[in-house]
Image 1: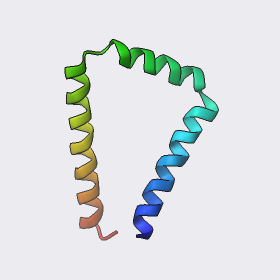
Image 2: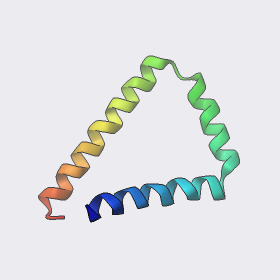
Image 3: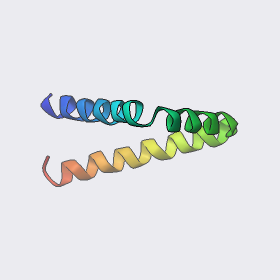
Image 4: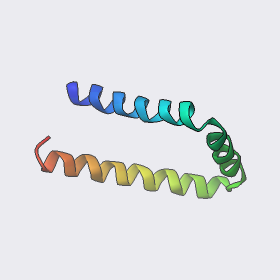
Length: 64
């Protein structure tokens, strides 16, 4: 459970820093995402999920 809280806290810190330090950059990125076709966004999302699963698997293999 503590690992889940650590992961969630890390994500919130990173997201909060983006909003606090570069809100205009975030707006530009969102505008760019609106221009990308939906199929490409789905493929990108699937790729990110696979990379995340690999990283989680690797973390457990290294003995987290």
